[in-house]
Amino acid sequence: MNSEAPANSKPTVLIVDDTPENLTLMNGLLSPVYETMVANNGERALRLALSVTPPDLVLLDIMMPGMDGYEVCQRLKADPRTRDVPVIFLTAKTEVHDEQTGFDVGAVDYITKPISAPIVMARIKTQLALKAAADFLRDKNLYLENEVARRTREVQVVQDVTIMAMASLAETRDNETGNHLRRTQNYVKALAKKLQGNAKFAAVLTDDVIEMLYKSAPLHDIGKVGIPDSILLKPGKLTPEEFEIMKTHTTLGRDTIAAAERLIDKPSSFLRIAREIAYSHQEKWDGSGYPNKLAGEEIPVLARIMAVADVYDALISRRVYKEPLSHEQAAATIREGRGQHFDPDMVDTFLEIEKEFSDIAERFTDSEENVNAKA
Image (cartoon, rainbow, N blue to C red; front, side):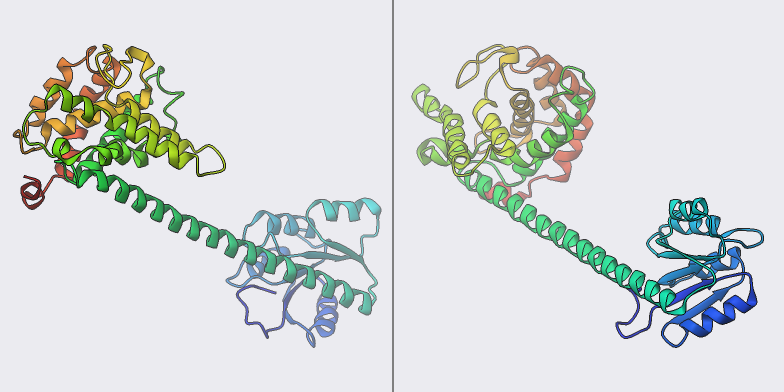
């Protein structure tokens, strides 16, 4: 039965035959039980079948002038609107190869003339029952697929909000604003997407990895929740001893995310990426960074990307201890850090798309209210 039809409506059978007597006979047999439509040639049969509401079953003659039944069946099966409508051939062609051809073009049954009315009715009833079951399962599967997709989206939204909430916990204790998180997210995504075109990074920077990098970027400074306020909120320059404590935020971030990893049953690529950038985004290309003084390609690729994004945003942002730099000044500083602070390839790529960074900064600019609240 058509899934769009009311539950109490009768199934519709399309009868196709070029002989008026046969049409009259079959219509008289079927109309007390089913809704019927009749066509005396293949072209009219296709027009009726491809109407707004297709029939539930087609009873089809083979030998017709012009378009024969085989071609009609092939066309019905080729069209998404009618490919699931069962076709039963009702024909005087009795050869085995004719019957085989009928099944090859998509028929579900093959009845030869002269017919037995009880057999025809039984076979139609069987095929309509099978179609109704198939339609139910198809609709049920579609419903389940949609429900899974809906719930997956809900879980994803909850995950994203949770990540931002966790990251914001660190930001509220720092001299940075929530928009810093949004900006760095978009910086790393823009830089990573551009780096996909570089053969050195294409294997690492798949679309899935870039999406996880984008979502995990807000956690890069999560370790700051473990830094004492006297150091984290200090408006002036840190003493060497205080800076050593500040540097531990990378290790604290790594350990926090590693603890979360141990709570799940299997490895998480998302948490691995978050842990990697939290731990290594303060490393420098020349080996002078922290916590491990990694140099060059020892530094994970994603952490190298995060380093460019994080420094750029720090440069253009107002802090209680400094005024913001312009985009041009920040870009010049990044350029000067090529081969020292930053991977040369990262800097070259940044310079190619620096306008994107400027646009992102403009789109997620800090309001005066937020800046003053942090001051």
